[in-house]
Amino acid sequence: MRNSTPFRSLLPRLGLAALLGLTAVGAQAQSVPTWARVTRATAPNMNSGSNARRIAVAGDGSYFVVGSFSGTMTLGAVALTSGPGNGHGYVAKLNAAGTVLWAKALESSSGDMNMNVAADAAGNVYVAGYFTNDINLGGSAFTSSGTDSFIVKYNAQGVQQWAKQAGASNAYVLGLAADAAGNVTLAGDSDSNVSFGGGAVTGSGVFVFRFSTTGTVLLGRRISNGGYAEGVALDGAGNTYVTGSFGAQTAFGTINLTSAGELDIFVCKLDAAGTVLWAKRDGSVEYDGGQSIAVDANGNPLVGGYYEDVDLSPTVETSKLYVSRFTSQGVQLWSRQLTSSLPQFFNASGLAYDNRGGYYVTGGMVGTVAFGNTTLASSGQSLFIARYDSQGNVLWADRAANANANNDASIGFGLASDASGNVYLAGAAIGNVTFGSITTADPTPGTVVAKLNAGGIVAAARPAVASLKLSTFPNPAAGQTTLVLPVGGGQLSVFDALGRLVREQALPAVAGNAPVSLAGLAPGLYQLRATLGNGQLATAPLTVR
Image 1 (tube, one colour):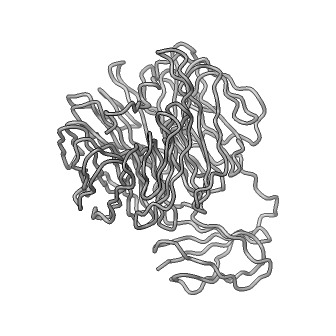
Image 2: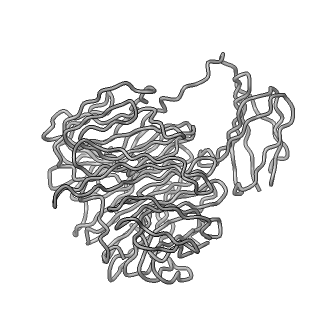
Image 3: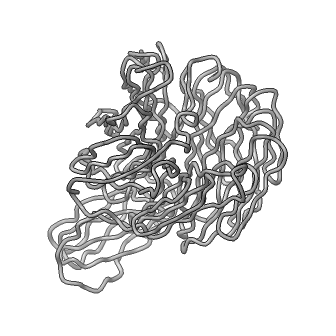
């Protein structure tokens, strides 16, 4: 489907060979978090290289990264060597300390390949994407007469559990997300029927599939008659959010959207049955795209991507970074378009909710860009990361620094966060690149996997008080549970088994019993964390039936 339209891939516009020199000026609204660690993949020569496209954090603090490579790549102490052909992907696991535990190659004879990754609370990892002609997943092998899509599950040790093929000649999957129960949802698009081993979803346009932890198709739904899906996110109530791009007039369920330009951004919400509840568009008169999406504890989605400016020449494409927040009912709360001083493709390729009411954004930039009160300047290409609050204000922004403007460059592609608000980044770099106080160096283009400790979060000035267990009844519960509060006031946060913040509510000002609605929460294990009025932290596990 994509080949029949003027859809243009992100990768060709973001080559790491760009010349780069970088400085930063301006005051920051909050302190930049600490770059805790950075892992760079190495390669033996310039005929080899790699990148990391997406990243996911499991419930035990381990994390997974997917990307592509050619020749030989070494990540940590694990080396991979590609077989014949041009398309080679990989998935790697790092433990909470950043040690690379294992890596697996996903081989294809064609270079047209891209993937996403998700992890569940048990430490299993899911990889989905598209390939051309053939792919070997290390346990299953698929073939296609054109471009087809796949999903595969590996356990915590990297052993394949199951794999599914879309079964179409022109299908692209880039969106992937797991829920606390171990179900996984993907979003993609095709111009023919798709099935993934279940009942066929007919027609063309954007589709959504949900799989159980054992690979059974729980849901397959065609949600539009056109367009391209790029990202998917889930909330704690079982709703699904999808973003991407569309052209002309496109129907999302019963809702018709009309683009203002060649391609516009779309975002839509589906209920647990796959019914489109609402769909919204945004965009300019040129080519615009939604590339990433994240959802907060209240079901408010943030969409990241780009607005494309009018071309300045036949060979130079320019765009604005785009981020926009919507309510759970589809009302657009705010939109930000940031512009670079130099012609370049400037986008928000990765987003993550920080579990503290804000969002992280990453991508690639060239030139001078004002992120709120922080100005980052670059004469070439550089990875950036910024944190927005819920109102669209930039709390801080940072970038990778480069030793040599002629040889060094970097870019960010994917983000993920944990329950503590730490953020994990997937990207690529070449040459001598510094992340905070951590300097990395390799002359070949290679994968970057980084962790930033939570920062820029202002804590209340209260005396330290020991934490205690929180009493709840009933437990397990369905519909509602009751907290027994020893102290009045404060805030309750509810986290799912993946450590994602799925609900927040204010606590009553007096001690005693406080009802907590569980409506909309999927069955599973949750953790309740109450910051009481005296600053004391109280926690309790809760099983929702």
